[in-house]
Amino acid sequence: MNAPAALTMDNEVQTFTADAWGQLSVRVGRFVDEIAARRDLMTVVGIAATPELAGGRPAGAYSHTTATVTIDAAQTLSPSDDPNQIDLRDRRDRARFPVLTGVAVHEAGHAAHTVRRGRLSKAVGAWAALLEEPRMEGRVVARRPQDRVWLRSSASHLLGSCTASSASSAARLLILVGGRIDAGVYDRCDLPDLAEVAGEFLTEKQIGIVVEQTRVAVALDDGDVDGLVRCAESIAAAIVDEFDDADVDSEGSDGDDGAGCSPQHGASDGAGDEIAASGKNTSLRDALAAMARRTAATAQAAEHITPPSAAAARVTTAAENQRQMIAAAGRVASTGRLAHSVRRPTDGELAQSLRLNRAVEAALDRGERTQHIPQAVPPGRLRIRELARREGQITAGVIPTATPWSRTRRTVVEAPPWAVGIAVDVSQSMEPVLEISAVTAWMVNRAAVDRGAAATVVWNAKAANLPAESIGGAVYVPEAGGVSDGLPEALLALDSRLQLTSGAGTRLVVVITDADLPNLDEIYHQAEQLASSQTRMLWLIAGQINDGPPAHLIDRVAGLPGVTITELDDPARVADIVGEALVALLESEAFA
View 1 (tube, rainbow, N blue to C red):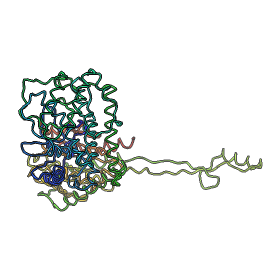
View 2 (cartoon, one colour; view 1 turned 135 degrees about the horizontal axis):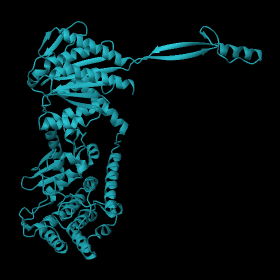
View 3 (cartoon, rainbow, N blue to C red; view 1 turned 90 degrees about the vertical axis):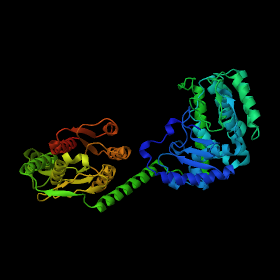
View 4 (tube, rainbow, N blue to C red; view 1 turned 90 degrees about the horizontal axis):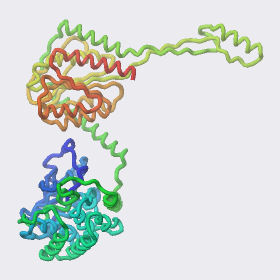
């Protein structure tokens, strides 16, 4: 079974361990054993676990040679599904994960009901493999009617992108969709007229042959290879296909190919190029999608499972992010201090720090708000015009409304809160910029006293807080050493200390690194979380950005909102660049 491309799981979220997928494989394997009534099967569930075939990677596959069922988790689960929380032997979990359940049932059906077909021509072997799909599912439904709902859910979901774009692809739709109607998996009333859909590419005679042979094949018993081959030969003779009959399928296509729509088994013009779907194709696709949603909803309702609302999902995600931040902050605090030295700032550094303090104070100055308050009685400044108006109102015998006095109220406009977090790479390659980075952190920390909040985390293999003294002059300079895979932990720790993703006001994160980082996906995920909360990020890249993964990371991060990438040719300018960025950000917020 092949899935639509949109179902592919992004690499950024594949954070589960191999052990978690291994344990899930064991649990799914026990479920597969129950359906196949065999004890010699091996089951493997994981990201890209299925073999890459000519038509793409199927969602599920069964190999007669090794008696192995493989399932691609990227196509059968969503990125947020935790393999540690899935056990298909639990009927509620089957309802929660209907596509995974359906693919497991389908492949177990191949193990129980599909036999090798021997040496066939490539064209006949391909049609025989397609005919085997609904035939096998019909046997599963006849033996285990309770599994019909899972086959409906998975097949509808994974066939939802199929379209008829040629004679052969139209015939395949008649077999894969119409055959499942004959097998009792689908209901005819849920689908449009398949003959009308296929009629754009097939003659009435061809449609009749495909439909008739499919019904004959679906009624065949297990092991009737000769009958299945005769049906496939009849279809191959009626449909002009792109397969080369001179090639021989020595394995007999024993079910490993699945039942999906791919360039080989689906909507292709023969050269592998997708064809735009017609209105009739669209109606079939919509009907399959609606069937998948309806089937999953019915199964979940039967088990009293209420799908979480979008708001509940956001709350759950926020709680999980908060848990990760607290855990990271705890780990960083328990790490202690990485090796560092302490020195006094130079006179030049003290003068530069004083300039930064003054620039920050000026940027935070929002001035005063002046309010003139009119009053009918003193105290206040007397306004003669209003006094004369009041006397006139009294003389006329009306209630006086004039306000002869006024006073002025001046209020200092408070600057919004602001926070700066600095993450410094202290791996061995960063030694030339560590001292000026430490001075920068010291300056920013002094500028934040009584004005904002600041924190600095250094990382190599681990992340740790960098000590800072706001009063006095002690600059803590970390020592270089180790590798540089601790940035995600450092960003989480800064988020926890400064409330970057959940706070308000001006927030800036400065990352000082040479971009030679191994865990690019985790870093991008954390940067994306910060950017989505309107936290600005300044990346200072020490030295030339090399080709390869570092540049790939920088290109991806640069596309996030509020991210600035600066190549640091002169390490001595670190403090100037950070100070200018902070002041510019505070000034821009003043006029926002």
